[in-house]
Image 1 (cartoon, rainbow, N blue to C red):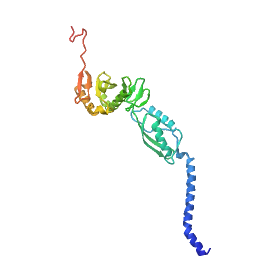
Image 2 (image 1 turned 90 degrees about the vertical axis):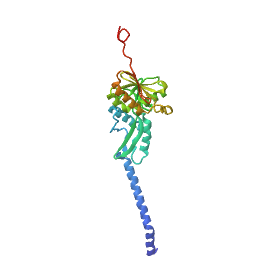
Image 3 (image 1 turned 90 degrees about the horizontal axis):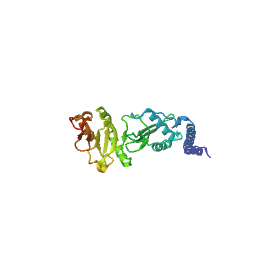
Image 4 (image 1 turned 60 degrees about the horizontal axis):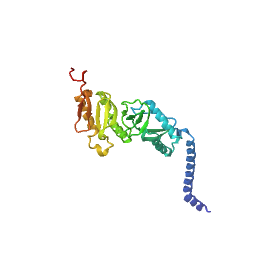
Length: 275
């Protein structure tokens, strides 16, 4: 081959060959680096090593730690942070691991060797016989006493699933207003389903509050005023009767609140005024 031909060959093929060689070298280095990364704990996260960074205000610290440990155990093997495959698997596993988990809000890798998880948890609103806790959607969350404020309401009824769901949904509707009501002297204690499928709350002083149908009964709930209006009705009743003293029953689901007063106690002898 003449010198000029050799020079032309190099000019023509030298750059592509060099680029290919560099590519192979880089690919080889990446392969070696990936193997090295797979062997390094910096690129793995162990679900057994959990730490609770934040928790809902209503959830006791010991319950948050217990739930985190249970979720970590359910995730099984450590996850590799190179790529999203393992973390994507974790997302599905977390949803299936516990009824406490409503959704996975965030799941992302944090080097070295960490993953950040933010969960939306279901809050207990109802307590069945035997201290069985249920969420607003009727999900069973577990058994046992949980120190939450305000406490889950005690369900009174036969335990029919639809009845339980109605009461749980209504308990969730009134939950945001309970702290304010308690400051006004109205502490809810029990919940049950009354006539017409309308939910009733009972206070610690025995006052019955006829709340109305829950939002889950969409075909009938439009007959009753919305929950926000029911709360306003109850506030109006409290202005007339502070602490609901002397009241036996308050009806909230109608266009105007109705207050029924308790019968006066009869003195000894069975007639008002004695004799």
